[in-house]
Length: 97
Image (cartoon, rainbow, N blue to C red; front, side, top):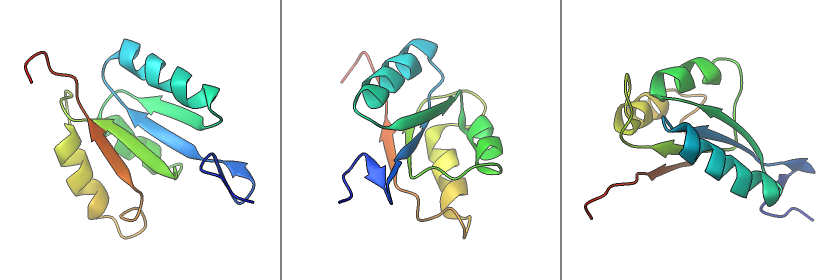
């Protein structure tokens, strides 16, 4: 039986796109402890390069990042026919709600 942590008997692969090493490490820890496989890159531009080599099941992306922010990255992703169906979760940490 498939669970949220597995797809076809393999771990769900999540790409984390986060410019803060601390936040990326925290997300990786939480996700790997619950059975997910993770990779991380520091911004949207690095994510584009990553996606030329691999295809994750889910992407978790920060919004505010240097070089290519989360919005620009999502626009790029949804323009790619072979990648547009990958679910994306956008997140950000702001000091002012």
